[in-house]
Amino acid sequence: LIDTLPQTLIWSDDVLSVLDQRALPKKIEYLHLLHIEDAHFAIKTLAVRGAPAIGVAAAYALAQSMQDSKLQDQEFHQQLMANATYLKSARPTAVNLAWAIDRVVAAYQEMPYKRTLVDCAQAIHQEDLAISLARGEHGAPLIQPNWSVLTHCNAGSLATSRLGTATAPMYTRHQQGIAFSVFADETRPLYQGARLTTWELEQAGIDTTLICDNMAASLMASGRIDMALVGTDRVTANGDVVNKIGTLNVAILCRHFDIPFYVACPSSTFDPATPRGQDVVIEQRDRDEVIGRHSTALKVLNPAFDVTPHELVTGIITEHGICAPSELRRQLSDLQ
Ligand code: MRU
Image 1: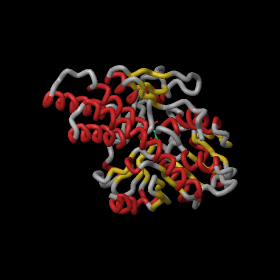
Image 2: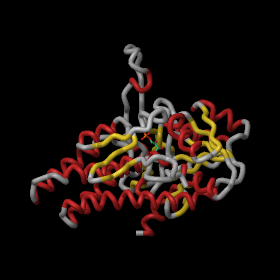
Image 3: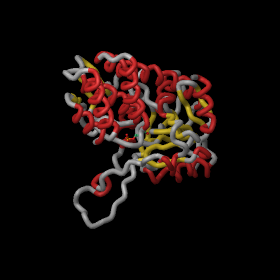
Image 4: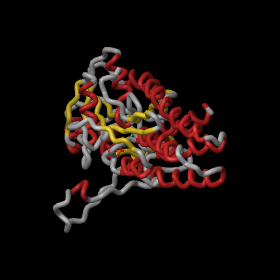
């Protein structure tokens, strides 16, 4: 479906390489992450980004970091735990990072061989591919013929292993031959919408228009947006949605203009251990991302994510189907 796009992550000969998203769309370059510090840096600086993709990257990085270890038994396990903690510290908000690392550690504890680590990371990667196809199938019918869909940030192929989160229903609907268009918020300050989402969707042949973040209200007021569809870095137990800063603005606007606001994610983005969105650590990033390096006097705030209360979310699309945010907990626990 989107075979023209370069792979976000490649695992080959026990080395993880990631497409450097900081350089896109100008350059297509891969970073070969030979050491755990390289992986930590790549995640922290958003060379690899998006909740599912950083989970997959961290799982591989953890596995890779232990392959040449000469440590045995208890000492091996201690080093594995230390590396896991270090990788988790790269970014705090997306639960997929900790989820994937914990899964690799648990697999090793169950079957303590070095290759277990690699096998588990590969399984997480493969599952992410399959899950995105299922999410696309469930979400595609929500996009009615000739509708315009607003999206924010990049919740696309680049942020996952394949079809993306918010973009999965778009790619699937496009493949079904249904005409629709997308408005992509540019997504200040790092322009994931302008640099990444437009680049992806255009290559797939989807009619895409870039807008500044502050244009959505006016487009909605003139009836030009039919639904909003975004990804998420964490859905808390009560269904609150944590996603790229500016998502809350879109959700509030949708409520005002009576436009459906949907969120798409893998079920691994659900965090039942955190009660509400306000309990999530919101990553605070460097001031330079907002103001550049030239002005040192100004006070600058740069929170990378915000919390959309569950009341503003029409539905959450996962590989299991679509449900109200308050239903997600029950739906996922029924499946276990
Ligand atoms: O800071 P980023 O670019 O990693 O933020 C990504 C997002 O906010 C996405 O919407 C999110 O990870 C969900 S979908 C992949």
